[in-house]
Amino acid sequence: MMKTQPNWERFEEEMGSTVITEEQETNKLSKDYYWYSPVLAAELADKVADGVAKPETVEQALAVLKACYTHDIPVTTRGAGTGNYGQGIPSYGGLVLDLSGLNKIIAMEPGQVTVQAGVKLGRLEKELREAGSELCIYPSTYMKATVGGFFSGGSGGIGSIAWGNVWDGNLLEAHILTMEEEPRILTVKGDELNRYIHNYGTSGIMVQLTIRTAEAVDWEQVIVQFDEGEDMLAFTESLAYDDEIRKRLVSGHETPIPTYFVPLAPYIEEGKAVALIEIEAGDDSRLKELSSSHHGQITRVIPADRYHKEMSLSDFTWNHTTLWALKTDPTLTYLQSGFSTHHYLDQMRNIKQRYPDEVHLHVEWVRGDGDIQIGSLPVIEYQSRERLYEIIDYFESIGVSVNDPHTFLLPIDNKGRFEQILEAKALNDPKGLLNPGKLPELKKARQAG
Image (cartoon, rainbow, N blue to C red; front, side, top):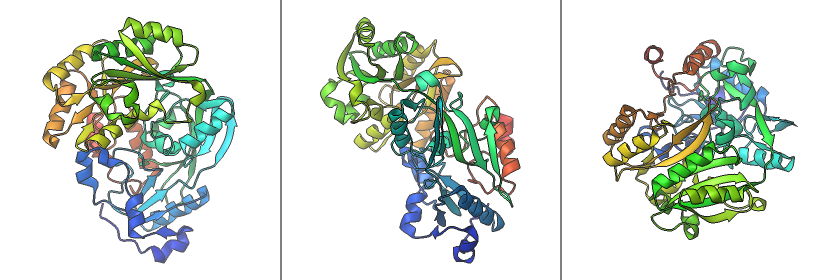
């Protein structure tokens, strides 16, 4: 696709929205957290939109899409820009469609809430808890991240140990805008949602979502430290499988990762591995027993009445772990991987033997497809692109799956969801104007799938 040079003044009235073209603002709104990756930082630094539209109603968004379709202008959708893979960066200029103005909470009902895509998850969690409910899952960036951005570009997060990831029934319904001569609003439910979850806005644009919620729980936050990383891993595994302890977060970090958590320094001794967890208040005795049996020491308990009223332990988990690492050393980076629940220790030992000073393990225990799984966002001592992909190749050679966070291309899964996204794109985006450049070459992608 050739990069366009739109004359916004010519059809701004037609779009029904003011288009921002000021260079500083368009640069800011054309970027996400792609700089987590040194590979993407080099590849995407010069990518920028020609303009930005900020609709405040769905009708305005439809008018923007209609005008862009008529004038062959690519459209890249944006929430809060907290994604890490360059999925919100326009590859071919055009228009960034900033949906942060669609920020209404439409309806709270038992077990679910309906919101517009631009609602921030931090605000939603606060209002839900005031009403006696809470989010089932949310990312560590929840204070800034939007609901639409999370389900369009995220996967899992806090709460995933109980409720799974974005595909596990946590999105109940979505309203999707198409990119056609006359854009449509689709109401999507059930398996059809796979066409739009984690699609980077390539097959349709989420403007309204109904997501699953749960009854609010009094969550206590606990730091447990260990002399040995393998004791930490055994503890987090036992906790993940322990049905007697209700939990929202089970996150583990080997040394030196805890040294990056500067605000937690008073509670973590140098050289220790740590587990950062959220459990239901009242499960303390069971937790003490479990931690002691794995040679762990509880060093900090944040009571439930302080939950989300100060810096949370979740602010050091998931990809916030990477952020704290980058604050310490900007040359560090990360991977996203999945270990075997039966052989993960052998896999990790092999990795540590081969890359003792380059790979530092960070695990997140989750539930996916109904089963307990061990996900990992290891911190990597970055040397070069070639060395990074050598490490990725080694991970995969020993059975560790890798979702490459150093590419802006939508990943090809082995569950048929990628094929569903391609089918929806063909129907909803006949000119290929929705976030172009983010899908792998179709023929190769189908062969790989």
